[in-house]
Length: 554
Ligand code: MN
Image 1 (spheres, helix red, strand yellow):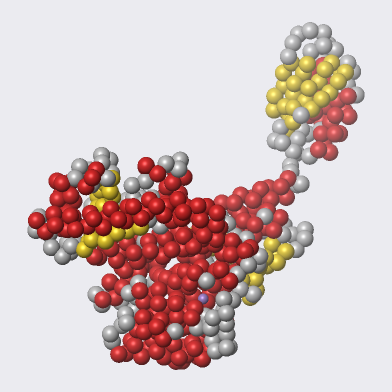
Image 2 (cartoon, rainbow, N blue to C red):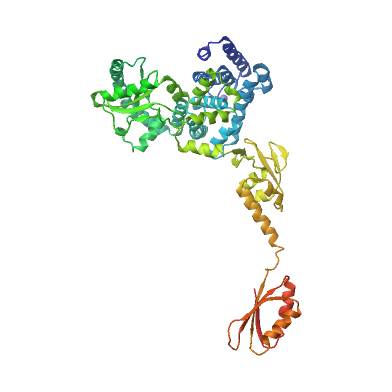
């Protein structure tokens, strides 16, 4: 444990920062005293490992201290008030945020994956809360072995579907890769083992080759007057290798980047210089030169990639980047955040959404997931929970009535009241992301016309309108005109007799015509009758007329 502590502290030089971290450590140690994890080790290892991941991302002492304290409210008798009292508002805010985010997750096992991701993002009020949760999840995944299989698989699936994509979205490549590989191990153990053994020989050969390649490359770059060159190797993460492998129908020959050479040079100019020097000596493979410096990936990733026929004609991938690009590729938004901190921008005063938006502005290009995040997520959507923990996605300003209709038409119709976070509220109360909403129902209840003045969703509006229309149908007036068809034996004075009877009833004749000139013409009469009872009376009178045989009406 001493080792982890000194590793964490090694990332800080300021005495104040060091003492903050030590204080958090003392508090957490006392709080978790006598607690053990499923693996049998003392509980305090878990928050310390979490904090170490954060320190390695170069996050500030506040975030690292919050990482150490992240489980103290949830799992020990310590309270938020105590943390606020001892560590101040900001750390208390972060610890509270991490605790709440954990609650959301637990309630949401039945929720749809896509909504879960959004919920996760919407509920976190500060980007650091997400970073702490990711670090927490990483250590939980690393110690998953102590849990029963079913639980391991469930947690791994959630990690693969929710946590890893979020890490990817935030550009935290390193954590994303580790989360995916650990999920892979638990979800598909056979495939994992197969891949490891299949890769082993290839991997060793390639690594040996790159060891020989390194000095040759360095020598060339020195001749080109590019200094401060660092060359190392990058091994592809297993889950992404496995997917690539499947994509190329299990053909090794298509996979050139199992192990890549990575060149880190001080400036952007150097990066292009290195690319030129490499192409001068080794012929590049067509179509595999990628300039992610000029055109960064949507999550902010920057580097130059090329694949060349290296020494001995071996196909080799080379990635070229500056140290800043490298930090960004590994730590994504965390690197950005740490960088902003150093520049003295008061990032913590921005909400995490502002941070993400601002960060987004710098990011160009598009990618499906990111697009969907931007469109759905930033088009002012909120995410609320059902009592069962399902996530319901609604437009901003949506009310309990919108929520009720989203669940089911019957729930909408019978909605008589609502509880938000266990408090009774009026039906027009705008909901907030993260609210737990319960609808109170009353049988035989009908939707109210007033609801139309505050509902926000198209669905609720249409359903309410339809319901009101149905209600009004019961009092439906007769159509404006009634069409009579009278079949009668033709004779002089027939039309006069008919129209006389109608006039006697004080009913307006709109039009009268007869269809043919046979012995039995069909006489069509349009009448203006408001009530069914008057029509009935008229029909009786008309039937009394001589030579009238049949009357029908519409
Ligand atoms: Mn934890």
